[in-house]
Structure formats: structure tokens, C-alpha cells
Image (tube, rainbow, N blue to C red; front, side, top):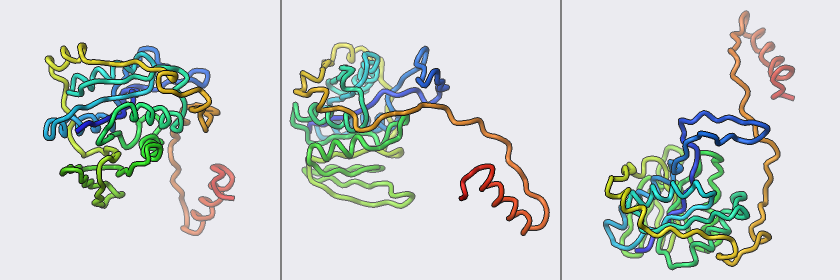
Length: 256
């Protein structure tokens, strides 16, 4: 079974985010594999160990993203692809277009991605990728079973569970609880440096900047306002209701 894992390098969730002049500062920041994508890498490796085949990991990002790919290779993936052309850095539309070209360079039975990235939380890239490839997708998986060419996915449905079946090839996304990602072993880390890691640009994928031009634009980046202490309303209930409505209308401006 040939498996493609699409991952993203993101800030470590323990990092303190700082914004300067509308730009998120990256100086001295630790980057890691997006946690949801880490579940995807682990699931792909488990399937390879069970069923045989190869696991390819791919990402779009600057040169530093190679570290995330090397970590996945150390976990047990076989080869990696890094699209580090700045022209490929756009929005979810851009990422899906680029990854679709990566996915068609080889025949993959299964494509796995994280449910969402912790930095933007859009949850769009994988679903868009499935549409680009015209294959079915099952999202937010907490359990995945592959039997021959049949796939059964148990998916999180806002506290409930849905069981969905599909036929390979299929794309699935990993939710927290799917597995417990392994730590790379010392031997795995040593081997990772010798495994193939290919760097690609748009031209290598037969794409132009116009083909992948973003469909959205970030107008402003800012940190949330510091939380203020709450206010306890006093007096009769009817007076509290009047004060609350007045505050929502004139102070918080959430009621017209």
C-alpha cells in the first residue's frame, strides 16, 4: 500500500505568539509537526507495518519545514517532498492545488492529513485536496480500518460517532484520539538523514503562479485583547436584566 501524508510545520503549541507590525514574529520560535498531522504520520506508519508498502510525507513551506519532514522520516516514513517555492505559499486553495500535483506524481492508495492545523484552524486543505483529486474523503477519524480495498472510518461527530465506509483510493483526516504518535528512535533519527527528501518548485509541478493564486487575503493580524474582570450584577432580577441588556447594547455592542 502506498500512502501519502500531507503535513504542515507549525508553532509549538507551548510557544508564546508575538505580533509586530502586523506580522507574527518567528525569531527563536520552536516549530513542530502540526499535532493533528502527527496522528496522520503515525497512522500511515502503522498501516505500512501491518500491510506493507511505502509512506511518503509532503509539505509546503520554507526551508525550515525540512525539519518536520525529517522528524516524520525518523518516525518511519520512507521518503519526503518539500515544496519550498515562495510562490506556493498562499491560502487553503493554493495548498490544495499544489498538493494535488504532488499526489499525482505517484499512485497512492491512501492519503492522510490532519483534521486541521493549529495555526489557522481552517480544516479546508485536505477536503479541497480530495475534491481536486476527485476521490472520496472521510474526516475527523478516531479509528481507521483497511481491509483489502475497503476502508472503514470511525469519525468524531461532535461527541457522537459515525461509521463511514469507502473504497480505495480515499483521503482521510486524523482527529485527536486516532492513535498515540511514537517518538523517533535514535536509529530512526540516524536513518532519516539518508532517506530521500525532494525539493520542488511550481515549475517542477507544471504549475504557474496564476494557477495557484490565493483566493483570500489577510487584511490584519493581531492578538486578542487582554481579558478583563467580569462584573457581578446586583439588585432585583428585573433590574439585573435591564442592566445586562443595556451593557450588551451600549458597551459590548453585541445587541442592536
